[in-house]
Amino acid sequence: MEHTPPPFFKTGPSPLARLLIFSALSLAFLVADARLGYLVTLRQFAEVIVYPFQRIAAAPAGIARRIGELFSTNSTLRQDNARLTQESYDNAAALSQLKALVAENEHLRELLGARERLGVRTIAAEVLYTARDPFSRKVVVDKGLRDDVTAGQAVLDERGVIGQVTRVYPWLAEVTLVTEKGHFVPVQNLRNGLRAVLAGTGDGALELRFIPLNADFRDGDQLVTSGIDGIYPPGLPVAQVTRVERSATQLFARITCVPLAGVTSHTHVLIVSTRRDLPPPPNEERKSPRSRGKSRKG
Amino acid sequence: MADLRITPHEILLPVKPGFIVLTLVAAFLANLLPWSGVLLWVKPDFVALVVLYWCIEQPRKLGFVAAWLLGLAMDVADGTLFGQHALSYSILAYAGIVLHRRVLGFSGTPQVMHVVVLLLMNDLIVLAIRLLAGSDFPGLQYFIGSLVAGALWLPLGTLLKLPQRPKADPYHAS
Image (cartoon, rainbow over all chains, first blue to last red; front, side, top):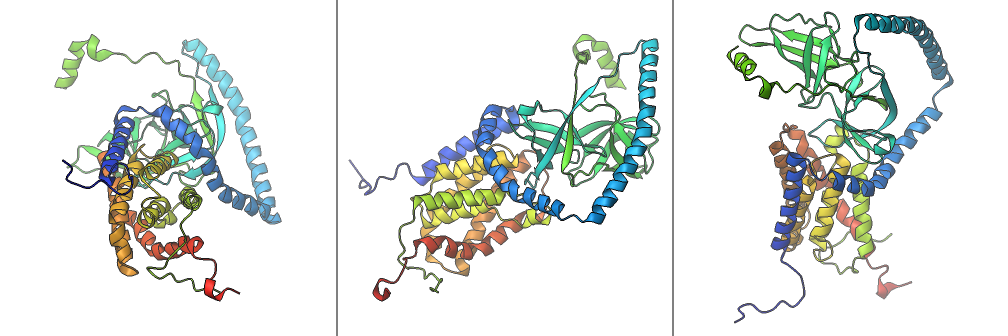
C-alpha cells in the first residue's frame, strides 16, 4: 500500500542520496590519493582537460611581464649589460680553472680507483604560478612528461636548490619547495663537511634535525647537498644557518636556516636529473639480526 | 539607464543553461589566476561562490555532478589532494539545494549571513581533510576568503541576474 503520493515531477534520487553517493566517491578518491597513491593516470587525464584553462589564466600575467620588459629603460638595460659582462668575465676565469680541476680530479680518481662522478642533465623551465593551496608550498612549472621530467628530480635556480619535482603531468610539473613541511634534503656543511638532514618547517624557514649539542655548526655556515640520497646532485647550495640554539635541557641543538635560492621569487628554474645507477640499498634488517640487536642496545 | 536593483520577488526570464556554464567557467578561470602573497588569502573561492549561487537560485538546473567535477578540476589545478574540493563542493551544493527556500526568504544582510556560514562550512571541510592528511593549520587568515566572498554575494547576485531581466517594459515600449 502506498503511503506517500507519487511525486509530481521526476526528480531522480533525493538530494541526500546524491550527497551520500558523491561524498562516498570523493572520500574514496581522497583515500586512494593520500594513502595508496593510486589515481595517477586519472589525475593526468584530468590535468589534460584543465591545462588549457590554466594556460589562459596564466596568460595575463605573462603578457603584463612582457609589456614591463618592453618598457624597461635604456639605462637599466645598460646597467644589466655591464653587470652581465662583468659576471661573464669573472665566470670565464673560474670556468677555465674548473676545467683544469675537473681533469685533475678525474686523474686523481683514476689513481684512487674511485667511481667517476655522474654527469647531470638539466632542463630549463619557467614557473607558471605558485600553487594556490594554503596548506603546502609548491610551484607549477611549464615542463612535464613531454620534456622527460620525472618525479623526484631536483629543481634549482641560479643561487641554489628550490625543491623537487613531486608530480608530473603531460605538459606541467609540480615542484614541492624545500620549505614545505616534511620535505627533507640531505646536506653537508661546506665549512667542515659535517652531514645532516635539512627539513622544511612549512613557514618559510628550514631546520637541521637531530644534531648533537656539540656538533660544529655556526651562524653563517653554508649548507650544500651531500648527494648521498641519489636525488640531489652533490655540492649544490641549499641554505645558510641563521641561528644555533643550544640548551642543556634539550637533547639536540636547534639550528634554523634560510634557503639560499629565491624560493618564492623566481621565474626561471633548472630541473636537474642525475643518472641513477646506485647500488641497491643494503638490506641489513633481514640479513644480520645481530647488528640490529646491538644498535637497539646502544 | 534602467534601474539595476532587483526586488526579491521580481519575475525574471528563465535562465539559459549556457549562461550557467559560462559563469562557472569564468569562476574557474578566476580561481586559476596567479594569485600570490596577501591576495591569495583575501581571494574568495569563486567556484564555491558561483556553485552556491546557482544551487540556491536554480536548484534544479545545477546539481551535484557539476559541483563534483568542478571540485576535481580545482584539485588538479591546485595540486591538492584529489577529491578534497570535490567533497566540499558536493556538500556545499547539498546545503544550497536543501536550504534554497530558506535563504531566498531573506534578503540583504540576513541572506549574506547564511551564505557566509555555508562558505565557512566549505572551508572547514577542506581544513578537516588537510589536518587529517597531516598538514598544519595555516592560521585564521585562511577564513578571510569566505568573508570576502560574503561581501561579494549581493553584487554577484545583481550581476548574474542581469541577463534574466526583461529587455524592456512592455507597457512603456518606445
